[in-house]
Amino acid sequence: MIIICKTHSGMCNRLIPFITSLRLSRVLNAKFYLNWNDDCRDIDYPYKGEKTKYIDMFEKIDDINYINDEETKNLLKINKKIMVLNIYQKITCNVEKLKKYSLIYFNSLCHPIYLKEDNIDFKNYSSIDWVKSDYGKSLNEYFDMLKPSREVIGKIRKVSSIFPKDVIGLHLRHWPGGWLKQNKHLVENSFIRVTEFIFSKIKENSDVKFFISTTDFNKIKKLEELYGEHIIYYKDRFGECEDDMYYLEDQTKSTCNRYKNMNGVVDLYLLSKCDEIVIDTSSSFSLAALLMNKDTKINLLNHKNY
Image (cartoon, rainbow, N blue to C red; front, side):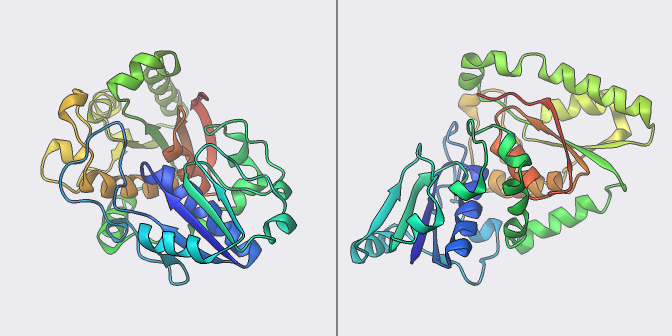
């Protein structure tokens, strides 16, 4: 039996179906094939420069077969009994039904893959329920198989070395202008809630530190002005200019690129190491960080579903 997962969109929209379909392959004792092309990007921005390869971000996992579009087509041709699931479909079959197929193809998915036996409540993509479930916690061992590339792990170690014993992580998204206009109600007063939260935590413990994970440098600067040495962030980023490191306020002048993807992996792993994570609205990045650390405390301060 074969399972193919073809990923699309940005990094964590790829990681979640990749890791959850990898888990399924282990449950079914199936060969696992990953089609992770080099078009990994935030689809709200044009891409500039050299494409980000999988190996720029992660080491290859030994027993995973990494394939391209042509190899995917060939596998689909030679297998007769195939189940194909596309972007808006979710698998809720039981194990016995799936075993009847010679190949299961997850085509351009961005949601988690799960079984009827997992007994989870998947209301929508950004619902927190499935992350907090036993199913969500079970994914930790599969995320552990994922290893950052050598370049990336060096950056992670450098920043995590200054983490105190207890650190609170806050993921603050950078919202593209077009999305923000259509969904303003989801992010209204979110930054005010963040500042109030930080202030209250400092009142409780004057030694508390906050790791800020964001591609919005203006938010970091504001928090540094307000809370100084309480704020930690990933400073020595990959890239040669501001747009390599952070998204610009003017969406028309900002791009996605290789450096942003690599910086995203560093930020993700650092966020996952925090003892408490404040997740942001409708974010696969926030959810992936939680799935990578089953012991971290989840804070829904800034979280709203679509």
